[in-house]
Structure formats: C-alpha cells, structure tokens
Length: 253
Image (tube, rainbow, N blue to C red; front, side):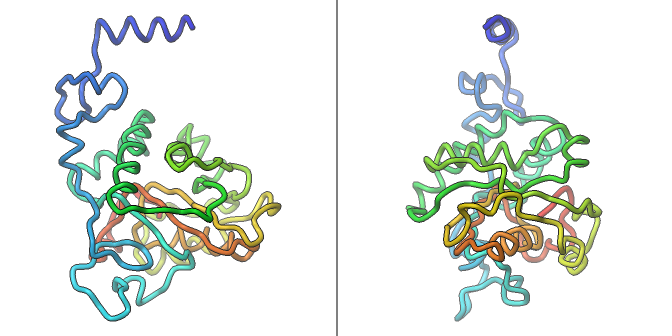
C-alpha cells in the first residue's frame, strides 16, 4: 500500500508522458502510449494469409502467403495485430529489451480492438500459453515479454493463463542473428512439454511478441500437437512482411 501511495504521489508531481511523442495525456498515467500515437501504429489489415494472418499484397487460390506456401507452419492459424514497421518496431524493442513492461496494457487495448474489428472468436480454446524463454535468457532479461502479453490476452479472452505446460530446454543462438533458413534448423528440439495433462484433444492459444519466419511458433506448436493438442492458435503483437523474414532483427519468432 505504501508503495502504491508513493507511486501515486510521484505520478502527480512528475506525470508520465507518452513514450513516443513525449506529450502528456491523462491516459498515459496507465498506458505508456497516448491515443494519438496508438492511432498511428501500423495495423495488420486484410486480406490475410489463411495460416499466419500476414497481409497479402496479392491474393492466391490457396490464400497463403509465400512463406506459408514454401514451408507450412505447424500451427493451425495465427493472428497478428501490427505490421513490424514504423512505430511498431520501437514499441516491440522497448517491451522486449528495455523493461517497458507497462506496454502489456497497450497490447491489451490493441488486442481487444482487433478482436472486435474482425469479430474473432475462439470458443473451443481452453487456455492461453506464453512462448517460453530459456531459463538462461530469462535470468539475463529478468522477465518474459511473451508471458506479459499472454496474461493480457488471457484476461481479454476470459481464459486461464497456463505457464506450466511448455518449456524451452535448448539455449540456442538468438534467432535474430540468423537467416530465414537457419532459423528453422536452429529452433529444432528447443521445446518440451512440462505437464501434458489436459492437453490431449484441446485447443490452445500460444502468445508471442512477433512472427517473422514463424519458425519458433511452428516448433512450439508442433511440440504441443505432438503431445496431443488438437489445434494451436497463435496470437502475436506484430508480424514481419515476407520480404523482411530473412533480415528482421530484434526478434525471436
């Protein structure tokens, strides 16, 4: 209680400004991004790839993006809210590397708007799972940004958050340092099921910060499906364009 009181007094004397435009708005006392900057974030828009939800510049008969046609991922569907460009890049980097954990509230707002805009529903899903970090990476960073996002998603969707099902067991080189092809090889065997009880025949939602080549999400989803999950749905804050899959940095997807 004393900490909350001190925080309230501090915010009264030194009100928090938007992390992008540096202007004060009553909303930035809770959400670090003001409404004006929130409105400029590059939303992912239809037509969507039927597998990964990447925006399609050209529609095809199968409805898939070039990446999913070349190497179909093992998840069943994915939904990404933003394009990884413009203000989405510093937003993700601040969440992931600069301890801006309050950005989970921005994600919750964006997710709720995205669900309402496209009338998304996941009636068969039983829980939300965060993309896990290897313990060594977690010690280095101090928090798992995907778990923060997953908690926000679980609350928005009215589903339980389960952090004890999937774990990362191989401390591989960072995906961001590798090309598109090497990412798929690098992530092989990186995950393990900690608690398989309750997975069999269930629909699971797996949350991560960004999809690039989809290699990490595909490997994690495959591990869950091999353990008996019937469907795995990915929700991510952002997705890279097909053309940047081999070069996008500061990501792990």
